[in-house]
Image (cartoon, rainbow, N blue to C red; front, side, top):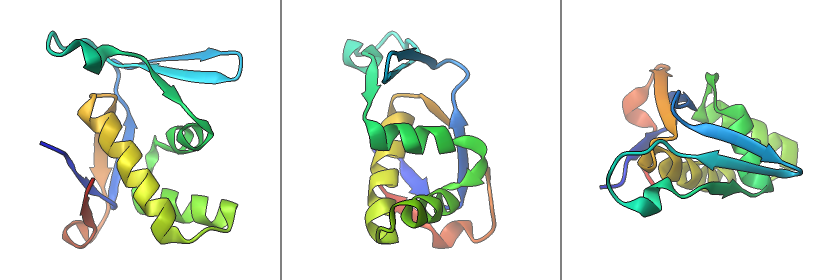
Length: 113
């Protein structure tokens, strides 16, 4: 089952995820669950993934991150939002992110990933 992403939610790295930087690469190693081995494979971040990951710091909600990236890249927020939702969905499914809190209007900002 795919997680439903709340744009008012604040997310941060799971305490169990291992982050490695090798030269210019950033690699996330998910926690072991004892289930499917494919869930434990390292996740290599591209440049967009790195920018999103760096903002998933437990302080800003996803909508603020979307607005920040849209402004930084002078790109439409709806396109950035789709990328952020997809990325966060992948990380949640692999237990590399935790939801730390939510801001107001939770029910108005949920999106399936």
